[in-house]
Image (tube, one colour):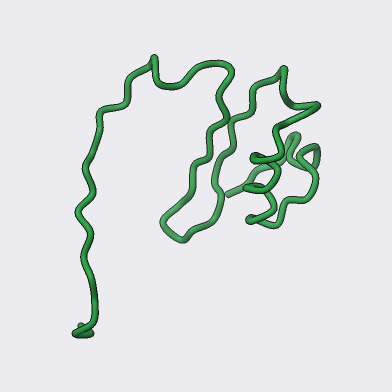
Length: 73
């Protein structure tokens, strides 16, 4: 193990159903860093926020509509 390695403590929080609503976007990223699942509010599919589009671009997705009926993982 390299001597310059750092460790970070991660605090686990319980997931509450109230934390995720029908208006929220959700990204599931696998241990390999690839996008596995994306949850999109149906009413925002036509005009998603710029921040969401920027996140999708990080995964090589330029058009959100290309995700319709597509398996990511």
